Image (cartoon, rainbow, N blue to C red):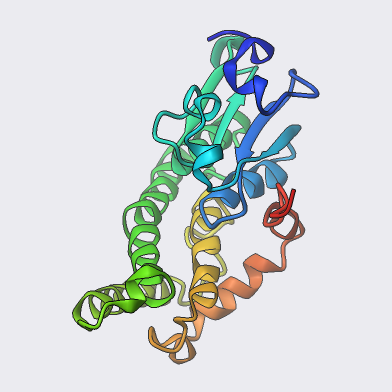
Length: 233
């Protein structure tokens, strides 16, 4: 990979300090995973606001970093072996940052895989299912008269929340100690409020999950990461 200053993305989102991690994101549930992790880990970084508009995520500059045209993405000039590395997919970014620092990924090798398991639970379950629920509850899918598509995702969201409710019984965090698994899951729980779906998924019938979300949102690094980069440029 070329140096950050020579990278095509630098033509649109120039790095002020090419020696630090460059974050390209927007404050969505997926986008803030990266910024929260960077804040929690104390890694120096620059945040570049990449909106969800085609003008940004489908621009030649952004596609030069992420051909899948989704935020977040990062460039770390000090990657494995001291060589720069480009990464996209929020779960991959979380695992990379945790392993880079040796933090938020458990104390043992066995712990690490428990953490990664729950990161994958969010990536394969909570994120896609909650996102589809939002589509049918708040966005274009809300105009569909057939109730079955929305109900499918209501039911799946309820099931996933029940898994979390049971797992969190007697625990502050999903794998014991606070970890990237919590950074993956927490932002997507806030999405239910944004989508206006708390009532239909039975949020008020839960005990452990709401308390868990309150703990997550009280963390200073979470509060800063959720607004980095800012929604408005």
